Length: 201
Image 1 (cartoon, rainbow, N blue to C red):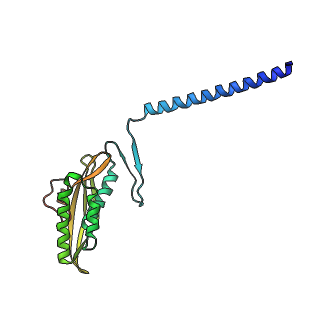
Image 2 (cartoon, one colour):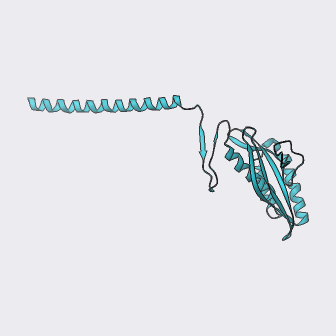
Image 3 (cartoon, rainbow, N blue to C red):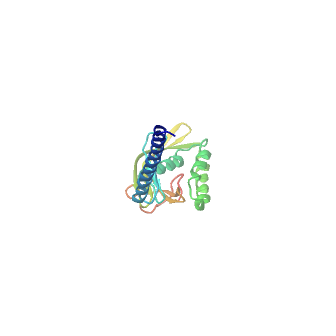
């Protein structure tokens, strides 16, 4: 092997070695950055959720949920409970029961079926028009204020103010409906004084 060939081979080997060293350094720096990020970050995962409809984004982690999530879930279950007719109550009951805590599902179903029976006997329907929502995030309570309109056939027979408070529990990474009842509009987070049509206690 002449001197030129030896020099070329040596230069090639040095270049390959430098390439491996450079790759190792980059990998080491990346691992250090990732490790520091994990150490400095909070020891919990928070998931930010963007709802399908353009309302509000919300988040949930392993301990709690955002006030926005409580607000939307509270409004959702109240709408299911109070927007009813003889044609829709079966579907709405099925949907509500999916969110009720298993231990309270039986009593809730009986209360909802009783409301449905009254609607069917009267050939009546109800619609709820929400006007405002109050949230107590720590207590996981949501108070929805609005008016319930009652129809017999196609005739509007009454419009009454309604305030319902929904109580939620969060466990197993899921928000469960614990109770829902009519409350005093001026003090919606005090103990419910009576059941509302379509509400559970």
